[in-house]
Length: 365
Ligand code: KG4
Ligand code: ZN
Image 1: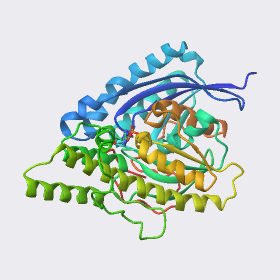
Image 2: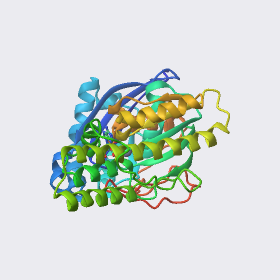
Image 3: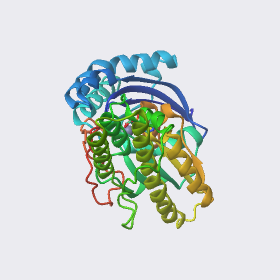
Image 4: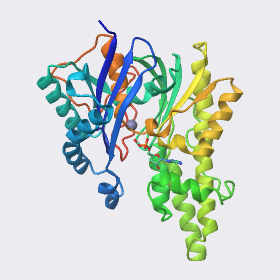
C-alpha cells in the first residue's frame, strides 16, 4: 500500500474559478500537478467591483471546464483522485455554493471522500505548500478581500491576532486608483505612480496606531485622500501628474507604515510562543507591493525573524492551496458528507471576536 495521496481542489469563493491537483507522499514536499485559474476581471470591470450574481453564474459555467483542464494538465483521470477538497467558505455565497455543488456531485458520482476547506486556511497554509515553513509561523494576509494576522500552530489551529475592521488594503488601493482616474486593479497602478511621487507631501492618517492591539482600518485613509484631492482641484482646477504621483506615494507610505507597525506588534505577541524558527509569511496581492514588502522585511530583520512570501500566483486565490489544505484535513481523518454547507462567514479562529469588515470581495471572517 502506498501513502501517496492525490487531491482535487476546487475554489470559487470570489472572482476566480480554479481547479488543481496536489499530490503528497508521506511527509515529503507536496507537489502541485496542475493549478488552473480562470479569472473574471473583465466580467466585473464595468461595475467597479465584483458582482456576486455574475460571479456565481460564471463559476457555474466554468467549474467543469476547470476540473477537466486541471486533470488534463496533470495527465491524470478521475480514477487517480483520492479525495475532493472544496472551499466551503468564507466568501460570496453564490460562488461558494457553485463550488460545493460541483464537489458534491463529483464525490457522489465517483464515490470519493469530500473535504470542506476554509478558504482562509488555504491561504494560511500556503507557506507549507511552497516552502514547508515550520509551525508555528505568523501569517499576514493582505489582499483585496482579506487583511488579518494569524498564528498558524498546526494545519487546523490558528490564532487571529487582529484584522481589518473595515476595508482590506487592496480595496483601499483600488478605491484610490478610482479616485485618481488610474487603471484597475489599483495596486499596481498606484505603485507605479508612487515611484515618481513624494511620500511626505501629504500627512495622511495612520488609523488605529493610537490604539493597542493588531486591528487595522483603511477606510479613513481613503476619505483623507479624497479630501486632499478635492482641495487641490478646488485650488488649481485639476490635478497635475506630480499631484497625482504625490497623492499615490503618500497614500502608499501610510498603508505601508500601518502594516509595518502592526506587524511589529503581532510579531511581539507571536514571539511569546518562542518558536524555534520564527517566521513571518505574507500572502495576498498587496504583498506584491515593493514598498510594503521592504518595510515588512525591515521589521522582521530587526526582530530576527525570517520573512517568506509565496510566489504571487499562489498568494492570490487558487485551488492548489485548497487541495493542499484539504490534504492536511484528510490526513487528520476529517471528511465531510453530502450535508456539507456553504458558509459566507467562517472565522478560522472560532474563539476570536467577529471582525466588522465586509468589503467588495465578500465577507471577511
Ligand atoms: O490576492 P488578490 O489577487 O485577490 C483577492 O483580493 O482575493 O489581491 C488583489 C488585490 C487588489 O486589490 C490589488 O489592487 C492588490 O491586491 N494589489 C496590489 C498590488 N498588486 C495587487 N496592491 C498594492 N500594490 C501592488 N503592487
Ligand atoms: Zn482569498
